[in-house]
Image 1: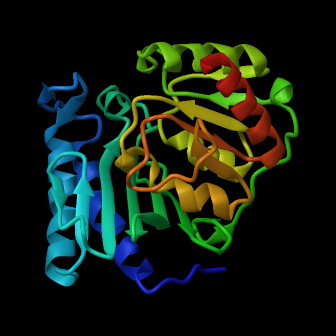
Image 2: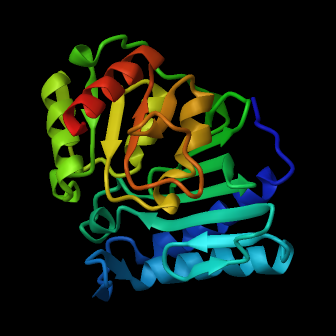
Length: 261
């Protein structure tokens, strides 16, 4: 089974171009810089994003771009590509393959196409709005888990929950769930879509951290929203919850909202 979308071939082309650049830096010494928000960046991040930007600007000059490393271009365009060259830079520089290249296409601000690409493991999730999610061209689906008390719950790390509201929500959700798993990065979205996890909550995110996950999670039968239950767009805030089962998602939202009221 293959997904279809007018710009799906371009999404694959971007991921294909990113892979050899990422692979050339993997588990090799890289220069690490600390950005103004205390997040880390390497030459690999910059080189991958530059490669993808150049392709978009050459082949689709009317499209916009929002990337982590080089900022916004033409955000008023109908179609905007949202790029995270290495989501999980800490994992990348320590050689742990939970990082991903995230590629999303937003139409009028709404994510309609998403790619989660793990170049080292040769795994590529594709989500297209209204279509079944695939992993390496095979359809996948999230598993049933009606109740948060039975859920495996993911997050990158507790240190990312820094505001009082975020800390309260994180603590309540993780106390309510059965099995916590940390250090997951955006790989957790792919695992939920594949049926190997149930809930993921994150804080301190930017659109390039979650836009690609929206079609992937939804196309696998799951739900992904902000902590108020609102759909995610390129303009959404930093609090995200994704679930494989709509019932569990509602329980998770109830827990988060009670904790942060």
